[in-house]
Length: 118
Image (tube, rainbow, N blue to C red; front, side, top):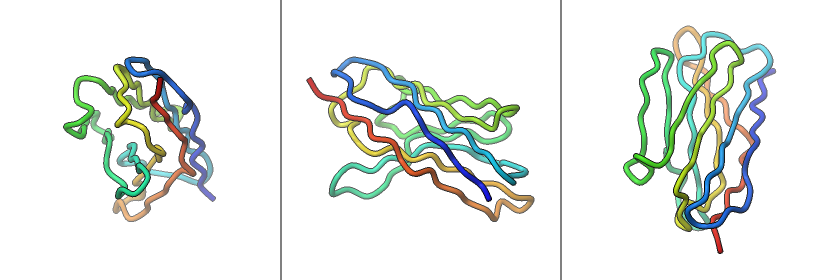
């Protein structure tokens, strides 16, 4: 059984920073991609950032230059460093992992709340 355990969410003032982490544990092999999505109230879930096994990263336009995704392959952990946070970054952030020899497996974390407010 695979588990994704997220941590690091919370309340922060505009302009502040937070770091999210997501550790994958259990019988998980051949992780291809790790990433973060978010969902604000009344909106669809959207991609925030992802990193594939080669180290290539991809970011939503709205977070480019402010967020940085990184990955520790030895620990099966992905991080999201969020700087210059804005109220519109408020959402539940979900960790996502794609794995398997044919990239056929996809896992989601339980979500962690990030609230940006003064």
